[in-house]
Length: 605
Image (cartoon, rainbow, N blue to C red; front, top):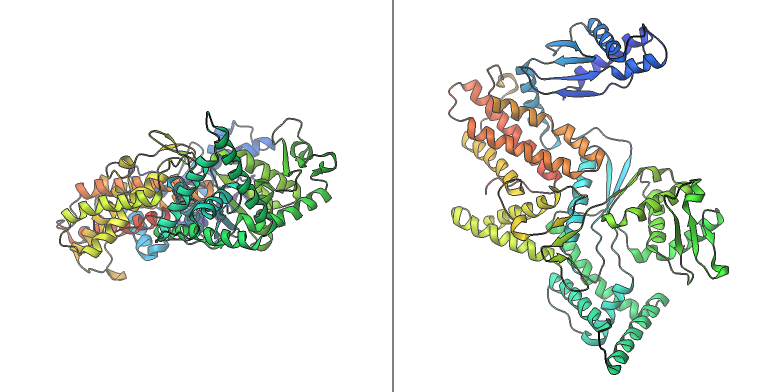
């Protein structure tokens, strides 16, 4: 927003330090909170420390040396267009703007940039975010929703921050759990198929629960019951063997039932406005991962103990030269020749790096897999992939219910579609009471925006490392730190602008902020100006929570402004018009921030 002035000052500082042989450290600028004026500042403490290490200067203590450099720099800067004044205080160089100029430029920047306000400069690296990857032959539940919402928000953030971004899904579509559903369907339900995308997916989840019950050993089983259960188990194992052997009939059944799950998943992603760029499947990297094992053996990264009846292993700590246990030893191929999750993740990483030329790879997977990914990244490093240093596991906590942990095996899960439908239903009942003048179809759209907004924000407003006890009443509350509270700020801003009509301002007749700003105006301008920094911080730290917290603070600040400042009844025309532009800037910033959270910004509610 003020890069021109900042760059000019930086150039003058660098020229001065070069001319005076001062070991200048990287200049890191921070905004100065309003205290009569706005500005930005940088510290010379690291520069002073550099000078001390080199034994240069008059051997002053670092704080005094930092202040001396700041004063010298200030003396050399002179006047800078757009800058009110410059101070050297306690080792910092503080650069201030005229308040009216700062306010005008913040507001103008937002309005002129529109949807691009806060967008970062293009970065040189390509990022892949992997998320939205439930196992097939189950149904999409609230835990999957946390994964998907975190991943989508992060993808939007890194993309908005300037990185070329690829969204990737990696559903688990093989394994004993998948075969279990196929087995019971083939044995007891062949030919049956519920109507409806979500009904089919949810039916598969019910079949899994039923199959688990049939295959599970019971207390006090009779010999007949044991024989029956063991017969079922043998049938399931035989189906698995046939799948592994590529049996045409079993593979066809697998593709058919897998598609039922994927149809449900694609519909949920559409509801959440998530558009994946790449679909990877666990089954597709199974065979390639076996070839990778051979490569790792050839490179002396992996050790083949199969001749001794063992497995193929990687002694990670030993290969990295670590004396203390950190990554331990990992199996990458079982003695029977079957692969593991780790093997397939290595194969997938190879595809990401070589086929998609990814520089950074972010895995949105629950915290239970933390060690797994540390080991995978370590093996990728041994393998020679430089991208291993920029692989990142965004772990997240579990979602449980008030009555305890969720369990797909027991059928104790909360389905996302059920919660989303309930959210929309509750909002629609309120909208029908309060907004009778809005057409029914429009009310349904608004209810969907608000209901899903409540659900999404309830996932993002909690630190990803923390567990969530999911309570539907709490998630759908519209009071306090919630999605609807933020959306309502956008609605209120829109309402003010709508009352003002289609008033526009020509560049030569733009209002100016040359009056005494109220406390609420100052706080709102300051919050708006922080948005670009919040985008970069959230993207660099891989933390959607940063944006969720910022958006709430912005909405809260606007609500306070809304109650304290009566924009339309302001007598002075310039002041009224300036405040209208401030409202327009707040509305745009709220819309941009909500978009980064994968939440829609309704105009009415």
